Length: 277
Picture 1 (cartoon, rainbow, N blue to C red):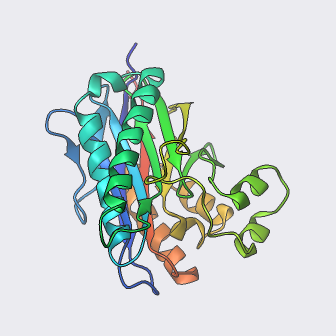
Picture 2 (picture 1 turned 120 degrees about the vertical axis):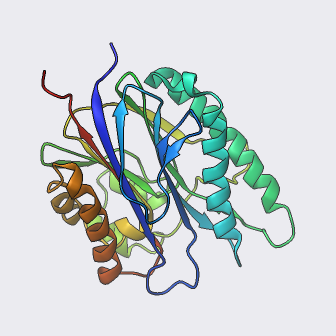
């Protein structure tokens, strides 16, 4: 049976206080029929499922000059275009995960090829992707240290795993959140779009969509600026569509005020429903 719910999406990016350019890119919308997606600065997007699959994407570029900007936007464009050609493969989580894994392989190869061109040496990009399927499931995928969170019934959980030495130490309980922020290897990642094909292993997983869920996809500029308990406090205040935009704005502004050393991007989705009969 198709899952009945309303989805309310919003996103925002900020250059921060220390960078000369913004190497983050994001996309939020519904695939199929020419796509329905958010334009920067537009009103929040309100969608109803069942329907075409919904995607939330954040990519953080790396590389010299403008290579990081090129990589992150290239990643978003390639993935949206490729997945938009086969929305039927994204109707339930299992097939969606296989399709997304294949598309990420194509995007990785394209960015790797571009990195071989003059001026793009070292180009790459992280990726955090959340796909809400027609069947009411969630497929997510991750490469790097951007993040995906869900806030459910007052509890915040990081769905994705940081692909970094420090991230794995944190997952194993060897260091605390505070120690991870101070660790000398905190800026190292070992998965990104643009890696050699032999070592590129994006993570994929599935989740069950539930009414009241609030999902956050963000770049590390946000998670480095806010503690998990601060993210939780902001997201637990989101219960209605009108509260999505203020939450996005508060996430970005708070991270910028606290840190601001990196670009900051947040994309939020509120799951509302199913409606009462």
